[in-house]
Each structure stands twice: as C-alpha cells, then as structure tokens.
Length: 122
Image 1 (tube, one colour):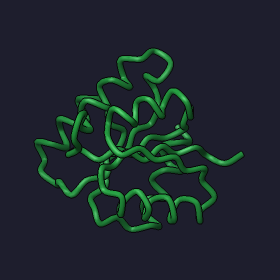
Image 2 (cartoon, rainbow, N blue to C red):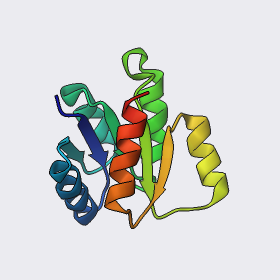
Image 3 (cartoon, helix red, strand yellow):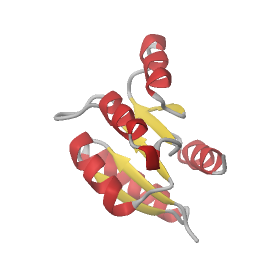
C-alpha cells in the first residue's frame, strides 16, 4: 500500500514539483493551495504524512500544524514543514506547534522522499 501524502502550498509550481517527485517515488499525492483547503482535504484524504508551507494566505503553516494537533484523530500525524524560511526561531516555533521535521526549499527529491519514509515509519 502506498503512503498518502497531503502537500499544502500556495505555490502551484511547488505543488506540481511535489506531486511529480512524490508520485514517481510511489506515493499517493494530494495537494491543497492554502491552510484552509488543506484542513478540508485532510478530512477527505486521511493522509499518512502532511507537508506544509509556512507563508500562505487564509491560514499559514503554523495554523495548519496547530489545527491538526488539536484534532484527536490526527494528533500523531507526521507533519513536515517545507519552506524558504530557515530562521532558527521559526524552526523552534514549528517544533513547538507540533511539526515533525523541517525542509528548506528548494528541496532535494531524494532527501525529501527519505524524510517522508522516515517520519511515516514512526
């Protein structure tokens, strides 16, 4: 059975890059264009891993992480932050919100796939 990944990013280019990279690795990929759409998609898809950007309209990545962690059935869901941000204080805030890991854009396909497999196994 393939892992289901929900990728939430307001950049259509990034969503398509993630879709192509992850589908090629055998993942079942679903995407959403912002945090609000991401939370709606989460309920429909039931992903094994969520990848979220930080800076998005309507609901940012911190809001997404907090909302997911607040839902009992998703409280242990692995969440990877994929962002252009690399500041330590933002990484700390993401960890405190409940993020499982952090990857800086532009992402390396092999490292991203390895990170997803690693956190999905926990």
